[in-house]
Image (tube, rainbow, N blue to C red; front, top):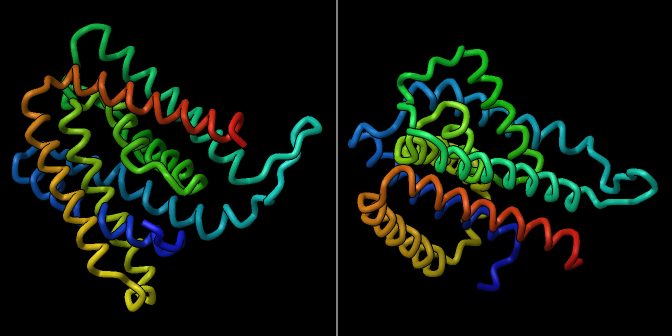
Length: 231
């Protein structure tokens, strides 16, 4: 849509924030969201994203030398992200194919483990500047065996909070907004999430998990090919 890259990031946060907020409210009303996980997993993740973006990432050199080869910081981080996505997707696909689903409420995980894993997801998200539901949902499904609908509703709360924090950090850009373009795009994403709500009611948790796993796999492989073979 020919939006300047830095401004497009703020546009994206705005659109995703509005859309995920609608999904979050729906999840709370339908009692699908796991609110304790929002606190114990989501809050540490958000804090570590901020710390990573503000203090750790600036320490990483722009060009990294490994075994005689030179890699730009962005390329190496995106390759790391692609490996994480592929590993997460394969785990989701395998768990969807093997055995019955374990209700999330019956999986007792020590709170310090949940906090650590939330922080780890925040670290990866902060390093690569991407992630969101692509990392949060697999983590909630793979680590805590939450059903897909519960994992999605929980992740939407975390993503909406994260997005609005990001938008508030870019308040000075509001005067540059093309509101007609932004609201039109946001309207499209809101329309899309309602289509998703409708379809999710028709699809079992097992098939949702498998389908999401294959989607993450395709995105992860695409990123890997783009960063290694298409440059």
